[in-house]
Length: 286
Image (cartoon, rainbow, N blue to C red; front, side):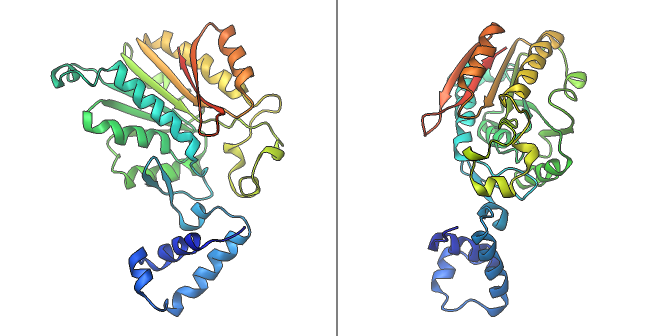
């Protein structure tokens, strides 16, 4: 991996605890930090993601703790946050008076397998000032990933807001969920890459990021989403939910397979493109 000056500065700041200005003003770094800096640069040369080395990743202008237990948050995933915040704003009419906002117009957010939980935390931080969140449930199949979630919950002061659950998809949420809720939003970034589809992936992802967060099925990679969407249909009916909207991230080659599935199940949906013009985010109204 080619290491530039900015990367070296970030690594050095993290290890020494110095700010960018302090680093600029110092003529020499203390010798005790040199072995750690050398080790970090060695790991970078081996293509390990910078975020794992400094245990930090920026997403939606927020800082998240990350390590090898979770995926590194991607900029293209921010589109989910953008679109769901816009939808919430329109649905709950934030432009109306505060009096209307207080009339129990609050959402319940459910997040499935987004690993570092950058999506739900970013949403919560952006709607908390309007007091629009009632509860947030987060479900994951990985114990290790949930350990990182708890670090980020504490980091962002959300202990009283987020309910973490260890289970598969909606299995742990449906039994404890109240009936007759008005607004429920579900976000998911499931493993959607076909097994052994290495030619479309960076080496750093293949070698360092957790397989369980990346690969699931051999045929299309969309099969796990199909299961989740069927669960959502059952979830809405079983709990008599008024409005249930699902936002998911898909792989660059899943536009046709996902569209075919959604049409066959008579669901209303909309696609959104990322900065590279790929259809990356899908809104599904259940």
